[in-house]
Image (cartoon, rainbow, N blue to C red; front, side, top):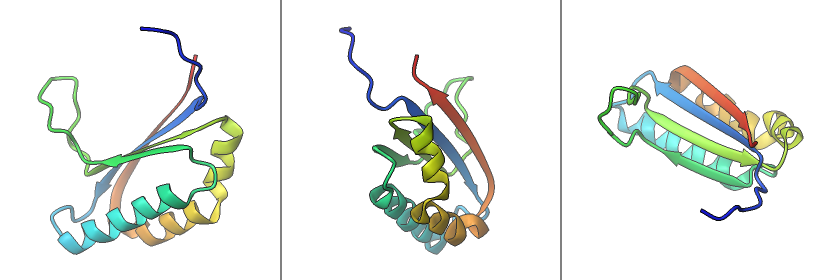
Length: 109
């Protein structure tokens, strides 16, 4: 594999467990707000939003409802994202929908 210059050096991976994951209205609300966040964030440069892939290996956790991965050019941009209106709106609209959120932040080497 050839070496590439990394421009997005900070990744923010978030797993969500919804309170009522079988409720279609809840899922639609959550999906709409998550996609809106990714599309409107001033600081996020790449966003991926999805559900468990259903891979069946002992090291894979498929227990969550949704996954969101957002990348930033720097830790400073991530920190700005945390307090930007789009992110705060997402939290305000969706925090009542989840029972658990797990976050994994990483920087590129």
